[in-house]
Image (cartoon, rainbow, N blue to C red; front, side, top):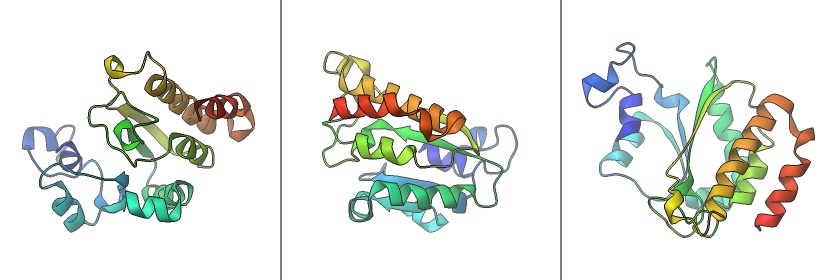
Length: 175
C-alpha cells in the first residue's frame, strides 16, 4: 500500500526515506473517484482522516466541485502539493489501457475541464500512473488522455486558462 508509506505507515525502510517524518499529513491528502481499494487500505485511510471522495459523491456533486474542495484541502497550511493521477480511475471508455479497468469511472473530458479551473500555482509535482500502452486501442484513447492531462496541467500551471483553446478542441474530438 504505497499511500500508507507516504503517511508514515508500513516498512520503515520506506517510511524513513529522507527523514523519519511522514511525507504527507493525512489532513492534507485527498483521494478522488475511489471505487476500490487494496486490502486494509480503506480502514487505515479513514482512521487517519484522509478525505476520500468516493465515486458516488463525484457523480452527485460533479468532478469540478470535488476538485475545487480537494485543492483547498491539500493546499491549506502547505507550501505546495502534488497530484497523482491514476488513469484507471477514469471510465474504461476513456481509458481502456490501464491495469485495472472498471466501468463508471470519472469522465476524462469533465476531469480535463475541471483541471483548467484549478489554481495550480502551488503544484510541485504530478505523476500519471497505471497507463499500459500495450492495452490501448491502437494508441488512441488512453495515450491521448495522458497527453491531454499533461498539457492541461502544464497550461493551467504556467499560462492560465486563456491558452487552452487547442486542448478544448482535442477534448471535443475525444467525445
